[in-house]
Amino acid sequence: EFHLARHHYDTDDRGRRALPDYVFNSRIDWPKGFKPLDEPLCGYDGEKCKSSQGRTEIAAGVLGGLLAVAVILTFSLYRKWKIEQEIEGLLWKINPDALQNYNGGLHPCASKQSL
Picture 1 (cartoon, rainbow, N blue to C red):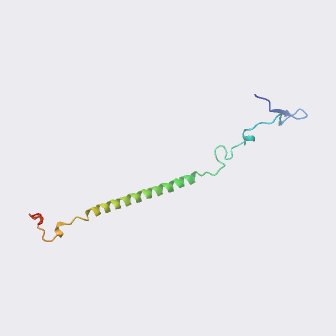
Picture 2 (cartoon, one colour):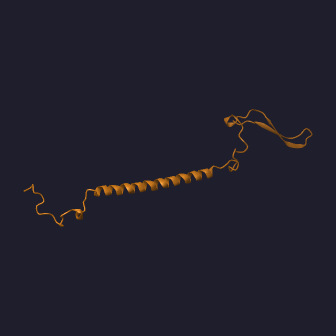
Picture 3 (cartoon, rainbow, N blue to C red):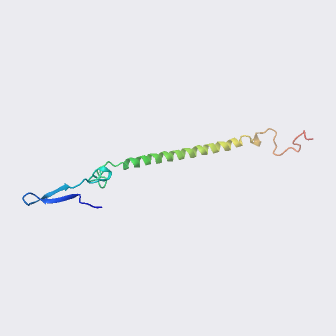
């Protein structure tokens, strides 16, 4: 239901045009209980508030750099661990040239206990 909330008078006592004078007939039920602002706090384009966009970009760059360093460090540690695992797997092997009295082939009687 609509009702008249104010009257607009634009003449003064002598009948001349004057600035508008608003007279409220009843209380206006504003949203959240108070009259809204004429202009948003940061302006219509955000020009009145300090921008945090530069800080966000710097933080994203720092976090991206830290992530890149962490990936490179993890990859290098993994490669080092993998190489050490391969080396540990080769420790039991003996170079045949390091053996004494090795002539390049197996002895026909490999085990004397099996006789």
